[in-house]
Length: 185
Image (cartoon, rainbow, N blue to C red; front, side, top):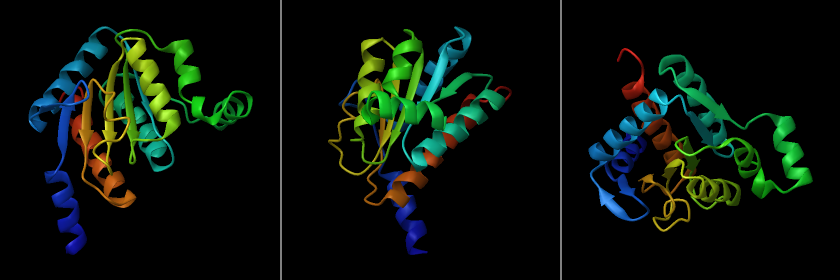
């Protein structure tokens, strides 16, 4: 029961901000995320999801669910050939930014998932998203001053001090978002 209480406390401790550091009510933040998602869908823009390890798995999982259930055009960069080619030929720090540089348009959405919020490849992609006037939504944990949290148009931070809590919490946030934006819900 202690782990369940820890997860509940982590989710209750979530902080949402806009434009890096302006605090916003969590319910209002989800409304903003859902409204932005509807704008992306209506304009037939693309929603990109990025992350490493378990966050990459979540990105892939939710890209599929959002395409199927929310009628969104989604994209992930989890193809091993693409990842290893960019990592080998350019650098691992560019595995998300390099393909985004070729595809990302103003008004697209980038959902960046990183437990630490300091993964260089995710941060570089987030910086590119901002420079291209994309909507950047970040999901982070660990230290509240992490680099990714400071960049987002909209940020969700969890006070998780373990990867298990961070990843489980991020999955819950992604499910809540997907359920709210699903067509017919």
